[in-house]
Image 1 (cartoon, helix red, strand yellow):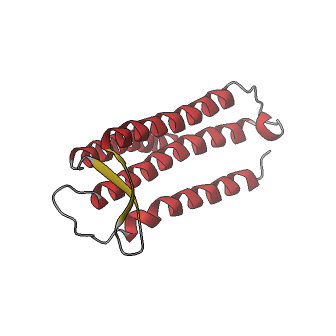
Image 2 (cartoon, rainbow, N blue to C red):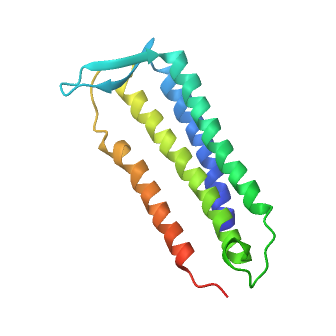
Length: 156
C-alpha cells in the first residue's frame, strides 16, 4: 500500500503541473474565477497572478504535508506504545498523510482543469463540468473516512 501511495503522490505532482500548464497556455489575458447565475463573469484576475497563485498554494500545501510527515517520523515508537507512540499507528498516519497529499494535488489539478475549461481562449461553450466540481471534495471526504477507520483500528 505504501508503494502505491508513493506512486500516486508522484503522479499527482505531475498531473497538477500538467493541468496548470495546460490551463495557463490556453487562457486569455484575464482569468474568470466566479460567475453569476446567468454565466456572466463577475471576478477576474490576470493570468500570471493565476499561475503564480496556483503554484504558491500547491507548494504551501505540499510543504505543510511534508513537514507533518517529517514530524511524525521523528516520534520514537514501540510496538506496545499508546497513541502516536504506537509504531503501527504512526506508520499508518504517515501513509495516510502521503495519500492525503496526493488527493489534495489531484483536487488542485481538477480545479485547474475546471478553470481552464471555463476560460478557454478559443471558445466560450460551457461543457458539462459537474464531474470536476464534485470529484475532488468527494475524494477528500472519503480519505477522511479512511482516517477514521485507521484511528478506530485496535492496536496491540
